[in-house]
Amino acid sequence: MARRLAGDGAEDLVQECLMRAYRSFDSLEDQRAGLAWMQRILVNAFRDRLRKDSRTVQEVPVEEVDEFSLYRTIAEEDPFPYSDSLHVDFLHSFGREDVHAVLMRLPEIYRAPLVLRYMQGFSTKEIAKLLDAPLGTVLARLHRGRKLFERELWDYANEADLLRAGAAG
Amino acid sequence: MTERMIPCSEAVRQLWDYLDRRLTPEEHAEVERHLAFCRRCCGEMEFAKELQRFLASQGSDEIPPDVKEHLERLVDEL
Image (cartoon, rainbow over all chains, first blue to last red; front, side, top):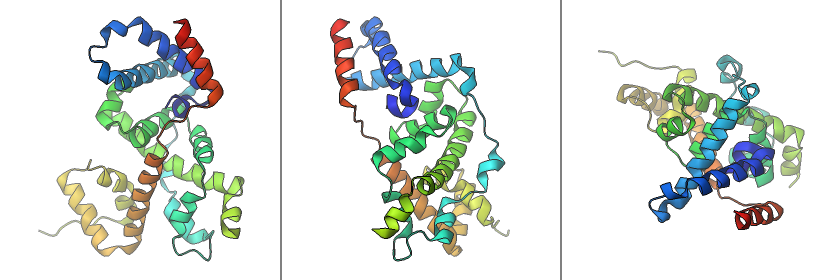
């Protein structure tokens, strides 16, 4: 989770998380809730890092990404002409490290809600609380994050030659 | 009263919130009405579902061995 949120900064983030957990261990009332407790500490540490480094706040205008449809682009470009499950094949051409590389191309303010919602399973209300942001802001960033992720999937697939490799296979 | 028909652009913009059940009952019904007659947007919706499953499937945590070793050392030192 730290790696998906912070990329190369994951190790520092986990260290910070462990230090905070160690200092506040007494506040953990139910040890069975340890994982959720650690996840919250980790997201708090990540949020504090985001705040400290204001350079990471790079809002992307919604109109810049709203027009892009990955579904339509795949259908129009038809990268696997012999496939009868074109869209699924497109997604399956990505390995785990490819997906990680695509996520790292998103600004952190969009990556965080996307990772927390769709990979870690937090609700949007929980994300708003964890990131200490209004729900409306989280929802808007989730929307842009999804669109950016779709666009970056397509760009990455082209740059990394995944489509040619998939079509040949 | 005539029921409002939304265009594809609006339906697509609302698809993920539709799947997450975050729309108001009126908005939800508008998207459903649109999907009932628009084959392309049904494709968009199926792909949005596929993309959600794809993201969820990437969610399990794997720690690189060198990072794991480093963190275990750190825990021992605490």
